[in-house]
Length: 549
Image 1 (cartoon, helix red, strand yellow):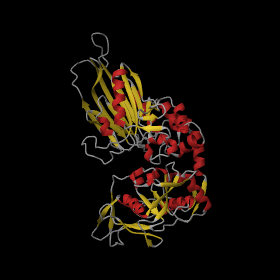
Image 2 (cartoon, rainbow, N blue to C red):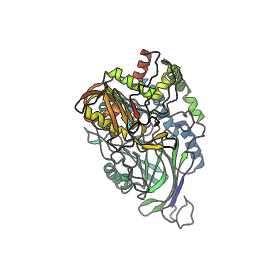
Image 3 (cartoon, rainbow, N blue to C red):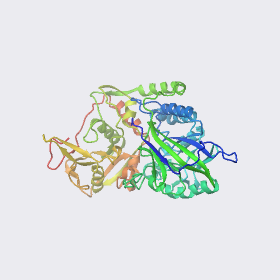
Image 4 (cartoon, helix red, strand yellow):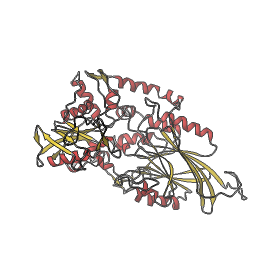
């Protein structure tokens, strides 16, 4: 962030002295320029965050600036996960049944198309269908299949005329949605492998639709590094590398993993990803030449542009002022009080009051013996002693999850904890013998759970699969054949994060309300809330070093 990375590649030497857009002897243009702007994973961030690092309103300002600069066709695309992620969307679009503010701004910006992201299905088809009707651009997905019709459930592609160039735009969605989502939200849908769908539909665009340029909007990351080809260990979920090997694709615009990938060539295809939350916009400038059989890219230049520091679009901000004020009033509404300050700063490496609050909510709501929960946001602000409002609750728990209670064995409890213990990957000790826990940066923070109801220690110096020590329930060692009820969120219950056993575990109960609602209800019932840390788990080597932290 803050740095602009530029890639310039000449794919074919242009020997003509004519300028782009100049006409040949037959009077037709021989060259044409085209600019593409791309966002992904907006997650409902319409307004700037506390640091002004990103928002759709700042994206609007950037698009307007680029539009005033170029004098050739400009296309704006998004690769999905737009309508979930902020209280603004949660309250207006989901709870109050009003138009999505995100889609409203995308309409005004002039987006041409968007891929369906996995989070578009978070609220079920009724909410998604409302967004589809509101949007003045299509939500594309060629690999989400309507089982009854055996055909794509969404438009698979869009064909645009950009000057003299015919542009085919294909949408693709990560197929791992059943591993994360509530079954009722994708009932009747099947999910094809992205590369399989791409091979078919790219040929449709090239041969049947006679497209000169094929752009793929793919809600997926890269299972191999785009330039080195080194495996990232995410081949079960990500398809970017495999998609770059599909013949006929010119531009592969990705999302889902929130990576900052400035435009670069991978297997001869221009690929990129613009992080998330409207912080970056990918800009790709193309020069195309008329060749036998159609237009071909002869030169391209690309960069990821930060929006930090840009003023949000004033006109759009004024249009949204009333709904923003209404949402703010709702978020400032108190739900209770706390008697001590709360911070999430070290919740990844030690037990903390904020996560213990989530555990207590889950255990009380479900009646389960054990609870698993993760730190879902690194942006949760510290909470001072005093009033607790809905804004802090939403900042603490950012996803629209419900709770699921399953039955697991003692052996499975140990396996689950060993899975999360992979995150803690050694110690670094100074000469003063003070030690810091090393963590695996390839494991997302939201896939690092703690467990309540048992006590345990994680030894980060031991090999994977042998790090969980002193695992006890009510003071006694957990027997492998013991049986427990465990409450988790629906993402984890579906196997999200690769946690073993949960997707096949017997389900006993599911909450009606979402976790944010349950947290608010808990704080209201237990007002004032005394923030406490029960200290049931810690990260320390064997033998324990009290200095390790």
